[in-house]
Image (cartoon, rainbow, N blue to C red; front, side, top):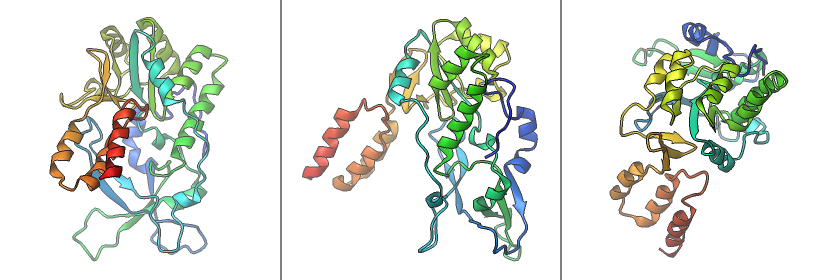
Length: 308
């Protein structure tokens, strides 16, 4: 993987305007429709996924990197999964609520900011056409130039890149580097501080432009906007009023400053099932509880399934 250079901690690898104007030419590139037997290639199937329960990114194209022919290996089968470099979720959640001011921010399209070496790009080929009704027109072949979200090594590659840049500036911005190193989980910055000025100091040094941010401090919101540290679409932080904002799988009410579990999807799912034995494991699978707060309840449901 290539190593983009930074001039401040976690600064955007590209400016937002430059990225938006050239997003297609830099994220994917076309490949000649020729048969190259010398190059190791892989063509990935893809489909659209619509998530109406999300406040943003409701529609996205998902690539199946685990797909394979009979007797053949998939792309994920050929990739090595490195150790987990992220902090423990339980302690991350505790640090999030340790101080009066809590906040979350998102590194926008983080995986797409890691460039793939040209010799490795052919394993991420895919077919695409803008006219499904015209059978005479062959689909075009494209390949990704950036890390694909579906590959199983993506979490390590993102964490390794972020930690690499944090180490470069540890001597200059020691406090900020340590804070970000302990408060980043995948592409989210989840943390808190004693007062608004400390929050501002962290993000001024980091050079981070906030995206999909939330905070329980109205003063911090005003200062972030005044300091031009917020992307244009971040003012609509929640979207529809009935959709909660999630922090590590838990819903966060920033006005009441409380964490809770949003179960509306589960309530909607249950009445449609008659076969209880088949319904229970699917219902349990819809409960995302990484910290384990609902463990006692989930355990009783699992025990019930064993006696049915």
